[in-house]
Amino acid sequence: MITLMAKLMKGDAKLAGQFSRTKDFWDQFFIENSHLSVEQLAQSLGAKYESFQHQCFDGETVLAKEAMPLTCLASLYDSEFRDSDLARKMVAAFRRSFTGSEVKVSLESAILIYRLE
Image (cartoon, rainbow, N blue to C red):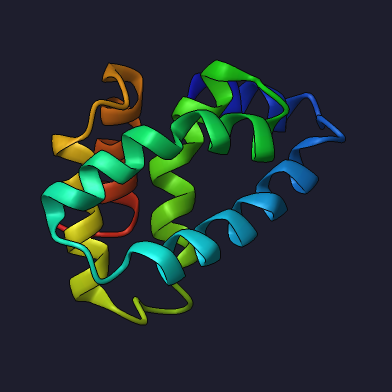
């Protein structure tokens, strides 16, 4: 979250557009994958990471890793989770995925923000 916060504090002009693109990414991801098991979702997260990085964050690796779990949960949340079971399933999938330790650290922050545990 350090990179994200630094960009916010500097008023990074690209950040809003990058985060906006994550909504489209996650909407499509859930259309294609929400029916999968946790293990299958974990595999899909690993397979889609690079796509997420380039499609949403113009290849900015660190920012994409920080944002991936946060934007995933954010896309399922309005004033509460539209599908809390799917949110919990995504948490379990991220924990089992091969997305890297930075993603898992960000996941733990996202879990606290959205009070999933």
